[in-house]
Length: 450
Image (cartoon, rainbow, N blue to C red; front, side):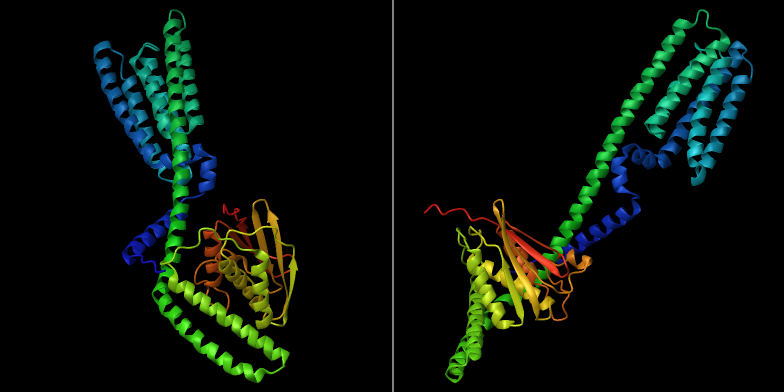
């Protein structure tokens, strides 16, 4: 069956896949990021948010300078407030310069918050203490901390602000100011709690987005791989019908040659066995050509049931005729039929057993183990060959992938497709003691209602 996939769609998908891989390389540790959402969000916002924090603080300090000048003119406070504002602005500019050096960036962030809290506390100190309008600057620092720091930073700035508030009022004297002091303290703590909750929710959202992004990235890669596989199979689709028709014609010729050979065989058993194997191979070719030509026009049987023992015996007969130097051992037995057509099951077993034979160079010992696990029948084919490299294990069922010089790379792919379409699974692994083992698990066929 041919699968047509537009090259333009595949090109766009390939570009998206390349972008996804480039993004994955640029991300540091996605797994660690999901495990530590606070660290993810903090690292994600430090760069642009620090610039925003400095801008807001500079703007607020400028407003503070205007207020300080106004109070200097009206109330004779002096130039102390204006000097504090100017010094704080200069220190914040220094923090901005320091932050551009990655080595000193964390220090610049902490210093910036300390300078901000110190600035507003000093302004409040020279403008009347707790009742000063510059106390609002401490509220602003808590909001800025939520933009800049993780949760621990918000708590720290809140505690610094409360400590600065109480230290300021202790210097001015607590008498007559307790009510205002407690009210301002409660407001600072409340604002810190709100900022903490908002930042925590934002960090959780960030962590969820990171997980979703990584899941989508994995899904995108999987879809790209599936489309590439379908494209590889689709390239062969246009020639399948031609090949099947040619096989069908070749089968008729082979039957004629077999009929010509039969009278010359006589009583020789080896020759008779070879002729019997040739006829089995001819029958298989004819069956394969017929199924290929009828695929898509004839529905698959609704009640596909195959006896594992019967299919295995047929596959063994073909292997023993074609590869007499391989000794086969059968372990276990199946007590129920599987949900796969007999011809398909035999084809899967022949593919697995032929791979085992080829892995051993056409001689040695191989084994087939049959067992039942719940509602599945498991059949494992094990060889004593060189085994399969770990890298090849990940791609062994992909269409066109092969480790053999003369291999096509479509045998195991076909076996996987037949097994998975029946609701089963197939897996390859290294066998104990060397070699490789490929196992299929097929669901037990339901009993017919007839």
